[in-house]
Every structure is written in structure tokens, then in C-alpha cells.
Length: 431
Length: 209
Image (cartoon, rainbow over all chains, first blue to last red):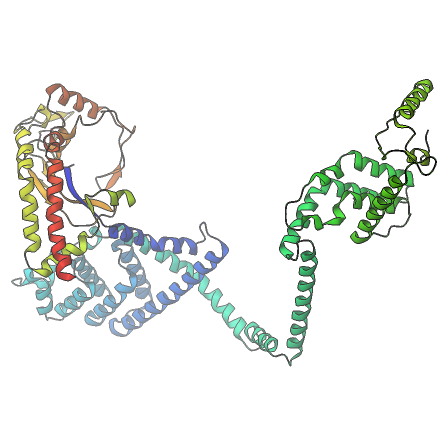
């Protein structure tokens, strides 16, 4: 523990970045072993692993060839050497790709795998202890082993007066490579080795897959030919593709035009209006579906009328009427209007014909009704039985179960106040 | 970063300026440090003067005899790392009043903002006592963070030793003396050091620009 009074501080995030980059390989390797990543990352990771395994396999093969030729290595000693390199890499945090060239060099000089391994250890210790480059140290050590100690003495001046240069060098730096190993690099190395091991499993599968798809008549050839044909408008595939393209274009244009009708020429707005109205209309649409079902089941007109009554009574239509606009072209969804729905219901129930009226027809019919009503009101009083004042439909007379005297009194009171009964009172069957 | 930028004592271009200083003129960096150190001299002397030359607590004294329990002897003879006169830093015995101005341009893997120049009390035991009593004295966590121990890591329960230490130093009146001694002169030193830095960094920008 020590304490400091800070008088001036500096901002330098390069150390943090370095620490982060030490972890950089982690995500890739975790991806390769499929931890917490999606399929793409997994595939990428596996391919990375396969690549790493291929590279590792190549570098191992090169070293093995050198050791077999120059150090008389047997299959068993090669296998053992492989393990030695791997464990050394794990212990020191130095990548196996950096260790193999040095090992090959020592194999050439010593002609013995064991001796080469010993020299490699010494060089690693020396490099770690002095902070010098492994390549430079291993070159100097190999020269010293061959009897030329000048390079090693130049690199390590403290050995200038030594009688056993290599021995003293080994003693001075013994074990420093493992002691000074960077824990981040050790961790990364172990993950890299894990990745390579995974790649060893993936690689043969990948090779099989590649040879399978690239053989004559394989996927690459077939798919390649298909794309060639597709690009050529003279081929059958090309013609069909052109036709599909044109048809799709037409359909898309048609759909766009259709929706544009309901959005003041804006297809997207029109689609939005329809979708909004459909959502708001859901209860009414469900009732409408009920009407269709009853009609298709051949039920009586009374039942259909009941269904419409239910629908109106449930307030489903009212909610639609109340659903105000404000949005561009919203009023242009006529099929969802009250009149339209009721009109539709009437067509279904009274006409006995299940033909659906178009919005234009429904609107026309409503307009005619309004015109007729206006004409009727204009001529009020001219013809007997027609109302003297504008029609009001809020006369409520409960006949069923009512006292006949009270009914007559109510009618008398109404006539006294309003002059006569509304015209449609006569058109309807009372009782 | 915005908060740091507002703090005028944090500088962002330390690395290139320090690199350029000696390229401009060999020895320029040393000259800057000498000037900075000169500014801290009175504060350093002041801090040194409040550090007792002998251990304020018997347990931190080198002369304390070793004890043995059930035949095993324990190294609590006061020559440990936290001893007053025999305190060690990097295996070197540090005098209790070893207070020096420190310039460290190295980067950190843990923090982006690090001290560039400050006053450093080096002896670990003295530093512990010198800052004891500065805070509330209550342990923030029930256990310590992991720390290296005999080749591995370990953590231990906060067992009240710290509390006891704080009680002791407070009763003796010798507590939080490091910051107390330095605090009075800190604002002045800060601006002076900053001025020196500005002088040299302007030198660099003028010559390079």
C-alpha cells in the first residue's frame, strides 16, 4: 500500500484497449464452440476453427518433416513432440506457430528431438527473462550449440567471460518463461488450442462436403448452371423467370392501386386505414360472419333479422360510427360504414340473394333513401296520412303486456301534441 | 470523458508531448520534472515532518520479539512489510519518512485516468496509518476483494482489525496525517505544476507547429 497526492493526471486508454484486445480472441473462440451465439456465429466459428486446424496441421507437418529428416524422429517421438509444443505453448503463453520454427532450427542443429526440446526451453527462458525476441535468442542459442557463441554473448553481455556459455545462460534464466508468462496470452492460447482441436473434427467433414459439392454434376455445377440459365433470357429458365418477374410486377402494381384508393392515392396510407378500420370493426365483423353462417345454413329470415338486431344492439356498429377519422383518406373505407353494414345485412336477409353489394352501390342506395326521405318531408301534409312535421322516430309505445287503456291514452296524447302519427307508423305491423 | 475533460488537472496529450520533449532537445523532459519537483518540496517536507520516526504502535516496531504458538514461531517481530521502520516495498526496506514526488508516464490496464505527477508516501505501513481515520471507519464489504496469496488468490473476512487500528490512531491523535499535511498546499501546487506542464507542452506545439 502506498498513498499518493495527485497533482496532475493524464488520460491514456491505450492500456485499457490492450487489456481488451487480449480478450479479443475470446468471443471468436467461444463462438467456435457455440457458446451464447447464433447459428451464423456458430458456423463462422466452426469455419474459423477449421481454418485454424488446417493452418496448424500444415505447420505441424512441416516441423515433422524437418524432424524426421534431420533429427531422425520416429512416429512416436513426433507425437510426443507435438504434445510438448502444445504444453509449452500453454505454459508460456507463446503461440505454437512461433515455437515450431525454433524447434525446427534446433532439430537441424542437434539432430536429436530431446536435445532440441531442451534448447527450445532454454531459449524461451532467455527470451522471457531478457525481453528479447525469441527468434533472435533461438538463433543465437543454436549457433552457440554448434560452437559459435559470439551472437549469444552479444545478446547477453553478462556471458562474455563465461566458460560454459550455454550452461550459464540456461542457469541464469531457468524457468523464467513460465514464471513471466502473460496470463492473457496463456488463456488465449488455451482457447486457440481448443479451437484447433475442434477444427480437427470439423475439417474432415468440411473437406467431404466440399469434395461432394464440387465433383462433376455436384451442387456447385448444378447451381452454377441454373444461375447461368437464369441470366440468359433465351433459355427456358430465363424466359420463365422474366414472365414471373412481369407477373409479380403487375400484381404488385394492382395491389398498390387498390390500397391507394383508400388513402388519397397513397397506397401505404390506404393500407393503414383499412387495417385500422378492420381492427376497430372486429366485433361487427364477427357478427357479420355469424350472419353469413346463418344464411348459409338456410335459417329463416327472422333469424337473420335477429342477428342484425343483436349486432346493432351490441353496439358493435356504433363503435365503428364513433371511430372518427382525421387520418388521410380514412372516410374512404365505405364497406365499413353503418349504412353499408345494415344495407349488406338487408340484402342478405330480405333479398334472399347472397350477392354482395359494392361500396358504390351501397352508397347510392343510402343517397336514394335520403332523397326519398327529403321528398317525403317536403310533401308532408299534402297527402292524407303523411306527417305534418319532420319525422321523428323516437315514439316508444310498449304494446305487449301493456294496459290497452294506457296505450290508447298515450296515442291520444301523442296525436294531441304532434297532430298525427308518423307515416311509417302505418306501414309497420303493430302488435 | 466529458467529466474528465472538465477537470483541468487531467491532460489528454501527455504521451505525444513527453515523447516530443526529448526529441526537441535532449534533457528537456528532465528539466520539466526538476521544475515540477521543486514545486512540491515544501509540501514534501511538511509531510515528512509529521511522520513519527518511531512506530506509533508497538506491533509495528522492529524490536518486537517473535512469538511461538505450539512450537511454531511466527514472523511478527516487526520486520514485515507493514513494519514502521523496516517496511518493505518491492523487497526493499523503506524509511518511514520516505516521501517523494513521483512522475509516472506509464499506462494502466485498469484505468484510463492515471496519476502523472504527485507526492508519494512509499512505506506501506506508514501509508496505512497515515490514511487511517480519513474515512468513516466502517467496512464497506463483509469480505475483502481477492488478492494474491502464496501463488494463488484468497479473500478474507473483514474482522474488525481496521476498526481497531482507526480507534487506536484516533485516540493517539495521529491519524490521517498524510493528506492533512499535504491538503493545504495542494491547490497551489496543482496550478503551479499545471503551469509548468503548459509551458513545456506549448514549447512542443510551437516548435512542431
